[in-house]
Length: 357
DNA sequence: AAGGCGGGGGA
DNA sequence: TCCCCAGCCTT
Image (cartoon, rainbow, N blue to C red; front, side, top):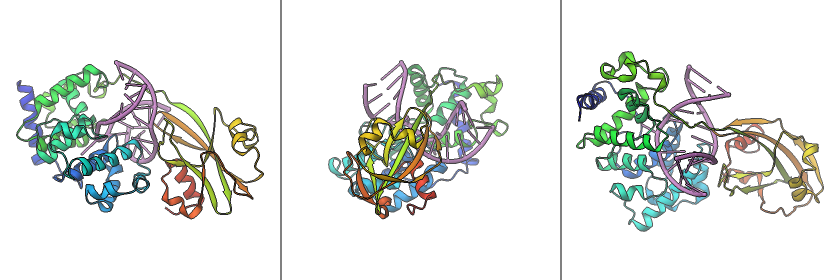
């Protein structure tokens, strides 16, 4: 280990001891179940956003056995609004795996932890170090940024070479007898001091040897190469009502919002008004032979996702008879809150008092 | 190796 | 608008 590396680790631990006042409910937690829950919730998610979800899950499911025994729909309802819903599905699968195949005891080696669904290198290292003090360095967005800046590394962090390089460096910096504390420190440091925008370099205890700070590279590091393409989609949701029944289905396609529910969807490749929509093939296929009256047409709402812009419009139709619609089931309006919906739909439901949340 | 997957906050 | 957030899985 060079002098820069020793300086880095020592100063970081010192900062943690003397200046780090970041507080979170899972910090210092030793129960691997609770640590795991927090880590899954926090994947690609800001602490402030995940915090209330963590509290809710712990309160509903204090143990992994209780989570494993929960109905899937109930768990998705608790996850509703948090995004990246595959995490929820995988989390439940892992909970059931632990209760069924690990005797209800959370696995305690890095490899066993990492083999659980939804747990990759970062989460495995976090659980292994926090719960069991095993010497595995975490490598998350914070760590990439702190290391790239301090050591002046411009290898793209979203490349294979970059991942390998940063993983090796991170591991070499880890004090193997103090993994939990060190891992917590570097992430807190990245979140509080070495922030993405306007880092607090003036108060930074690492500044003396920080390459980015000395070479004016703060805003250039870390380097990312991939740029995402945002595509536009137009969702026309038919809220088909018969008395107090509304038709919904679970999304199963290889697409966004998998395992969440939605109304009758007619997706079009451009903005479409109600008249044009009625001649759309999908509309005719679903509703062509059913007499209906148009009750309400909403304004178009826009939801910006990372990789898609969703324009959605809600059209309320009323029918006199209870039709059979391929793939959709009628649900009583009061029962809608038993199902998980994507944000764009819950927002509509709230605004139109169709459901109490 | 690359692309897909949510939602929200801040610049 | 764009970027980032305690990343992971699939192809």
